[in-house]
Length: 406
Image 1: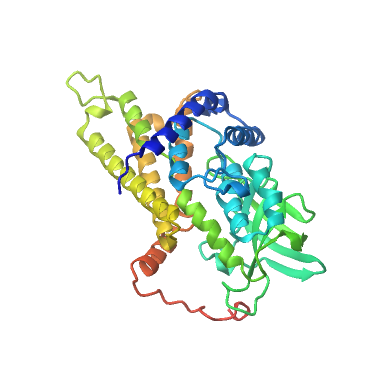
Image 2: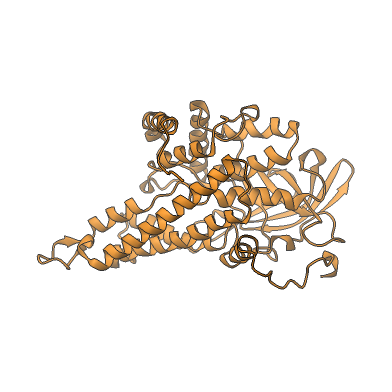
């Protein structure tokens, strides 16, 4: 592959860079601002609306669905340029764009697309993901939340967990079990659900970082109309795979942490130079660690470009998408650990006014989550081994066994 921009891509990059220079600074959110959750969501909605008005929302979505009809590489180019700014891009926006839109666009009907796609692109609707359960995390198909057909819809009972921003989002993408008499992957059905529906209770989970953007979500006799079912009954697993493909392909696509690492090394005093007044870049061990981080980051970038090129040719990356997520999760944790080391003792006990170190501490703690969210490392390695490398499958005692007999 040629990783340089073509003339057309260079022109698109120049247009995106110019538009962002004019509009992004007014929407930036810096760590020192200490925004509460509601204000973060408000700013995220406002930035998403600005993207829509500027012609940069839904870049790869077909024009007939409200998008720009652009290429996957154009989306990557814009994401690279957008990442230069500290913009409000939390899960309250990202879940809608990266998960809800793909599944509704692919599996939904015309009425559902008309209801949800444009409003999501404008930031008028925000989304959460109601997938994981206490007994169904890495093994999502083990879920127990039940949907029973009744009248013109379904009655849903169950519990979801790790529901990011469910306390402040408008709609959720929900997978349930509608038929326990078939093997666990076959008896699932997918819905969108209004988070203001009677019977939905959202309880925040207090995290080690002090934040509470994860939640438990309880559904008690929640009525979901048939018009909010996505795809046919029993096709929920196919919908889930569409969601997870988008999530894994998008992981780390726009993040470039090496520039920040080098800047941090430059700012960190070191006693390794003759004068004792140098910075961490004077230390050979620090330079080696930074070089390793650079090699890993470039490898991830080029792998992402390769898989997005496949998608632009209508080729399905399949389980290879998991390689993006697997490599990024480990790389992020190592890079943030390096940042903590470069900062030294100051990273452990930050001054009250040191917003940069507090943000670093938060990111370092959060990085452990990415080793689990969207597919645990071990699960992804199994998928890559079996579906990409054609190695023998792991033994599964539940294969082809009806769920109600497990």
